[in-house]
Length: 273
Ligand code: MLT
Image (spheres, rainbow, N blue to C red):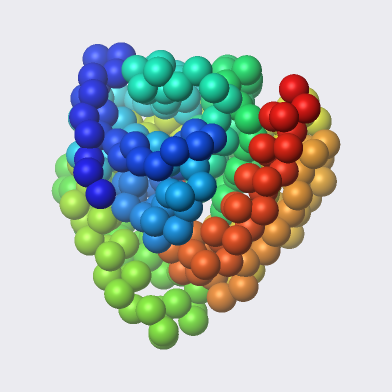
């Protein structure tokens, strides 16, 4: 798959753009890059126009020093859609940090959203302790690079069965984390620490929404995700077996099935508009 590059709001963004149909924006988690979506994108590219960026500061996209807020990421993505001349409403699909950005995208660019897909993510803001931990992470990653994050995060990213039966996924994630850009990782960690609490706003999300989680996710547990899905008027809640926090990588077949069913729902809603 060919990586393209474009300058968006002063930052060189790397992204994939492939397929035809309803635009579907795939937003990766922290501190990863677009590659976490490839198994699903390969399965879906005959059904949608998949736009899969490396977010500012990740993968092959340029980093910005300081803080990058979820709102800034969301505005980058609206500018990316403009640059690609995509004016038609898109499905905005984010995993974990990508989900935090998808929430912001919805509230800042509502008319551009045909449907929202929230994977393995949280609606709540950080607790004060978590926000403090992010500050420490940002400082440490700037001093010594991201390798320590691979050791601390990896055990919590995948289901036990994935470590046993698909060890290559763990290796792939370790490699992605270790090669992440320290400035980009620090800026996004500080941005996540500042993100707003979406819980009071959930009832205002009126587009079709899919809330999806791996049954073994310990970072954004199924019970917490089910509770926030219930607060979103048109949300469907789906659990993916044999998967943890990285459900789209761990069980891409079932995730794609859930996405394609959701796409039918979104497409029928667009016909009624
Ligand atoms: C992610 O996967 O993006 C992270 O777990 C998000 C977070 O640290 O809150």
